[in-house]
Structures are given as C-alpha cells and as structure tokens.
Length: 207
Ligand SMILES: Nc1ncnc2c1ncn2[C@@H]1O[C@H](COP(=O)(O)OP(=O)(O)OP(=O)(O)O)[C@@H](O)[C@H]1O
Ligand SMILES: C[C@H](N)[C@@H](CCCCCC(=O)O)NC(=O)O
Picture 1 (tube, rainbow, N blue to C red):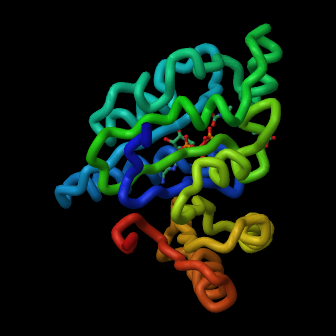
Picture 2: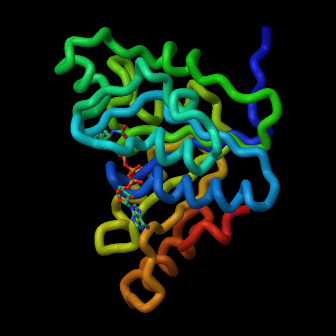
C-alpha cells in the first residue's frame, strides 16, 4: 500500500540547535494556512529539558492544527536535552533507528505542504544509526529550508551546511534578522550573492 505524501515535502534543517527551526517553521505554517493551504508538520523524534512544559511538537501542533502526538509520536519524546540517541541511552530506552523514524511518519490524505523538522544541526545525531541529514535523505524531501541566524559567524555555518547537502532546492531563512543591523544586512547580501540558495529574512518571502 502506498502512503500519501504531501504535494511538497520540505526538510527543515538548522545551522545549530536552538537556532529557531521550530519557531520559524511554525510562523511559516501559520502564514501558509492563512492562505488556505493544507499544511502538516512532523518532528519524528524530539528531546528536551525534563522540566520543559512546551515541546517542539506542542509548538508545531499549535501552528498546524494537529495533535502533538501526531506531529511527534509519544514514544519518541525523550526528556533529556541531548541528541535523541544519547538521550535514549541515558534514559535506558531502546536504540533509535532511522528506518523506524521514517516508517512512523504518516501524512494526512490531502496535504499541500509537509514540513519534517530535524533535531539540532544538519549532522546532529537523530538516531543511533544516522543524523538529521540521513533522515531527510531517507524521507526523500523535495527541498530544504535552512534556518540560520544573521550574526557574525553565520556565513561559515551556512556554507558548511550547504556543502553537506545533496543538490536540491534550498532556502535559507535568517531568523531574528534585524534590518537596522548593518552586519545582518551585509551578511544577507553576501549570502545572496555567493550561495546557490534563496535567502529570506522573514517568512513572507517564502515561495
Ligand atoms: N525569531 C524569534 N523570535 C522570538 N523567539 C524566537 C525566535 N526564534 C527562536 N525563538 C525562541 O528561541 C528558542 C529556540 O528556538 P527553536 O526551539 O525554534 O529552535 P530549534 O532550532 O527548533 O531547536 P532544536 O535544536 O531544539 O530543534 C525557543 O524558545 C523559541 O521560541
Ligand atoms: C535538545 C535539543 N533541543 C535538540 C537536540 C540537539 C542535539 C545537538 C547535538 C549536537 O549537534 O551536538 N532536540 C530536539 O531538537 O528535539
């Protein structure tokens, strides 16, 4: 049996953990849904501080209008702020396999755009046998959305990330971009001139 797949499947990656993948993706989902598009979000596995009251799945679910345990299955919630396989080990949970994470992703029958959010940065371990990039390759995404910041050092982080990606359309979103900050503007312009990717400073420009 073939499983439904969104018409457009976007892999969300970051230059670093806490860069704003969930925040930016949620803002983008809200904007797309307001236009009438059917949008879903999936975070195949998540790890977080044990005392956290709101997880990435909660934030994405609030934006997409889905159940948080549909966004991220409840058995893939690891309450330790470590890469998921490391968290699983510390919590004496079973090893995480990329194949299982992929198999657990289910989309609604009709979905215009699906977002798969990874963990940490592109090469952060997401399972015992693979990292965020491995997962998105297995999921066979159509394109990448790279969340980065606009501050000093971002060019290196973005270049390293782009260099590790397969050739697919990629959009860079500079989270927390401040138009009044000259460095932010100069970084945006340099990236637009030198990178083979679209460069956005907010979700409004996403096409
Ligand atoms: N543009 C922004 N404005 C306000 N708060 C933001 C913004 N971007 C991120 N944040 C906040 O920064 C924190 C980290 O962001 P977020 O959880 O989106 O990062 P992440 O890349 O998804 O992290 P992880 O590696 O855990 O997946 C969150 O508390 C989030 O609400
Ligand atoms: C705990 C964090 N919030 C995040 C995992 C980040 C792992 C980073 C590992 C690394 O690259 O060193 N978890 C998650 O996105 O579900």
